[in-house]
Image 1 (cartoon, protein in one colour):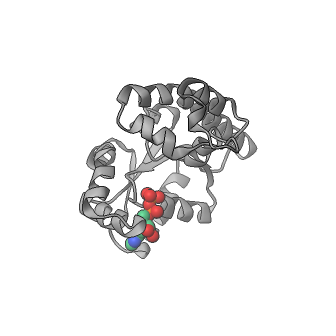
Image 2 (spheres, helix red, strand yellow):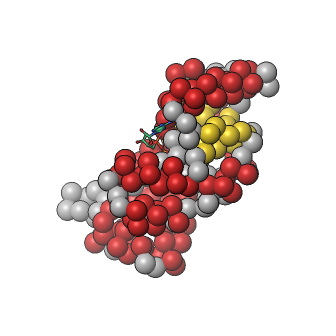
Image 3 (cartoon, protein in one colour):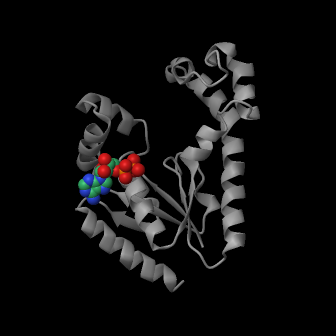
Length: 198
Ligand code: ADP
């Protein structure tokens, strides 16, 4: 079974995916794939530089994230263009990796960690979607702590994503990560047993 894993920023996706891997699930990580298409030599990076100019590259040919961020941050049309250059390749690579894992081991749970799964309309790729949920105040506090942000900076990042309550209402399964790690582990164990019956 292939299951999408999502949640909000700092809601605990990495924490929960580590627990599932510990139990035997295999992981496809969309963030790793997204970074991969922006590495030197990848045709997607070449297309992005072709559109936005060589100024988005550093002298060694790697992506100048700050320069690209500067261009797309305040310009929704530029961001949309960037997404249209990157998303098809990312989507293709996610599918390739997950189907390869499924073929390798059809009985295994495959989890595909995609922070912006709903925002990117990728839910149709999966049999089921699991959301890692914490209420907004907890999410804000953990994000401030982990990334060393103030309240306003952290709130801006949350506001750039779909509201976590909506993700919770759309998902097939929910892990509530607002308690301690042991409580989360317990819910993962229950989910694991439940999935074993499918
Ligand atoms: P995500 O992958 O969704 O961005 P993380 O798994 O990195 O989120 O968790 C965000 C932060 O919250 C991390 O610093 C992590 O150590 C912490 N954290 C995660 N789960 C818990 C928990 N149950 N209790 C306390 N802190 C947690």
